[in-house]
Image (cartoon, rainbow, N blue to C red; front, side, top):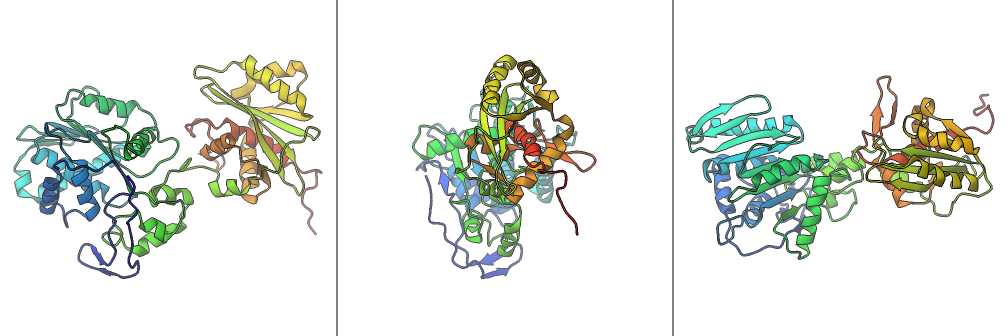
Length: 490
């Protein structure tokens, strides 16, 4: 379900109070997208009361809303939502909510074992320290503690009632454990299903299991979050799924204060409006994911989405009779490959076109790739087929005996990456808005080198970027000056 009744009355009228801001903001409590609501009883009211006692200032409106809706119980006492995911921008109070929920499970609900996991151990450690600090501040909580263990990577709190809380990070986080409740922080950082599977299926024997997840938006590599969001959106549209999906996100990609205000529920409470305005000049992909809670192709993409979009021109295309450069690249896992071509246009601009892609879930066939590539090489008057000896040497070796001129680009690869980025940012590169090319270009991540240089990292990008690498290789020749004298001085 989607809520549209989130209105800011006056974003300028804010006064500072003791620990929080006092404002005339109409608080954004309900998320824009959420699972269908129901009339089942909730244990969220117990959590809200607990937060009033042990959390400074208690819960904000959005935290109260989430507590009520995510902790609904069925007639048999089991959770209505065995998986509950809250996706909202940074600095809204996700950690505070997690802290209260973990403490509630230990001290009030006697949950036998809770596990908190984050992609980075330092994140889990900070959560652990905050929980210990809260316990130490309240004598009635600390009196129930049996032991606190600070063993690195296996920190644990044990209570006299038998409840335990552990922190884990990444990998097979719950192998060998039998938790009742799992708390996942920054799900967007989970780039494979292994750690999620180890935690999720460790709950199979629990009588009343629940996974509580918290995150802001991610990118194309956030495979776990993408999977959960698909389920959540389907549930919001009426699909039969017991997932609890609660998404505070902006309705559009527009980078503006008003759009951001619609999805930052702590605005005017713990977040000052001036602080929100100040970060709207940060890199767009950072604003999209962390402020607007909108998905992007790649958070750390070397190529800006706006700059690439401005290079799109579907009126340009390859000419069968013009000098052409082609490049082929194969992914390190040998499952993806791409062939890209480039030709010069007028005014020092040039066109780049993705000609062919190959994909095989096991391993690509070098011979088949060479046969396909050869047909393109014969169609256009090419100067060179460019390749990397490290990834595409076997294919190039098959093409050379057929009379196709090949050229190894390994030594020129760093320079070609720089030339690609410069051509995009200056608007000299033109492309035909091909979806596959755009996806791979925007998935390309910088791999820094010790001397200050960089390349498009094939492995670092964590997805297929063969077309991006091949585009860089052809750019090296497409930007080559017509004469040896490129710049005249005087």
